[in-house]
Image 1 (tube, rainbow, N blue to C red):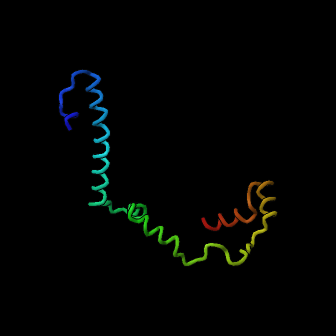
Image 2 (cartoon, helix red, strand yellow; image 1 turned 135 degrees about the vertical axis):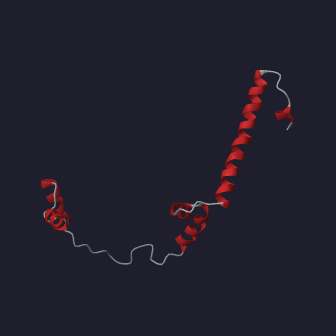
Image 3 (cartoon, rainbow, N blue to C red; image 1 turned 90 degrees about the vertical axis):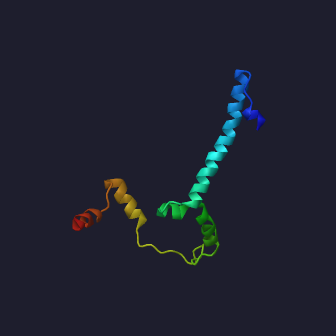
Length: 105
């Protein structure tokens, strides 16, 4: 503490005091912000989802999932991929997409 309270003799000593004090000021400001967030957290859903306290429940949810992690059977699709590829490369549109879009409006 004496290092910060004594009068500097030269500019280099003053500069060293400022540089050394900057580290403690940074730590104090960040600690104040963290304490403030824990004492009075924001009310937003974003904060409730991504706050540090939610991290632990998220980790627990990763290990207790209700659905299996890997597929148990082959997924069947009703899309003819070669036909869709041919339509998109030749006309840049799908055949039924324009009709569906007009019906929605």
